[in-house]
Image (cartoon, rainbow, N blue to C red; front, side, top):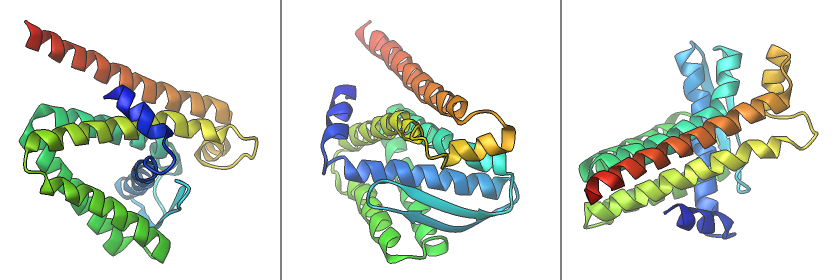
Length: 210
């Protein structure tokens, strides 16, 4: 499944919806961090190249800036983990993501381009309910979780461009800790999540064999 995710990640057209999905989870993580720290979400924007922007008001700036890349890692890990528990859990969690996307459209999407992209994500998850076998839904969600996690591994590396823009620079301005340190932290978190999932899957496979 990891090999399949790596191949899909390299395909120009096929990988686009999954990059949008990682970007969505990145931006919604910023937004949820703002809400949980007493702020509010003003607007969520997504762009065709996989970039995004979450405009917030109030809340704790440090937590909001940090949770973008960290949140995408968490979402990828959670999607894979919950989908692995049970076929029915995969179905319930897929429905919750659809509900989150609908709430995003109603409350925080303000432009046509983002609406089109988020609608594509809505269709992507809604199609899961058309699957007659829940086992297939479980496998697709597991693959989706790996793809989101894979994108969260590569995404922070794009901050190393010398432009001093983005979440890493925002955290550097707040903490005086260089941007490269925050990029390394996000990368370690994503790789650590992938390692934990790999070990957990290995244990499950060993139990099934015995």
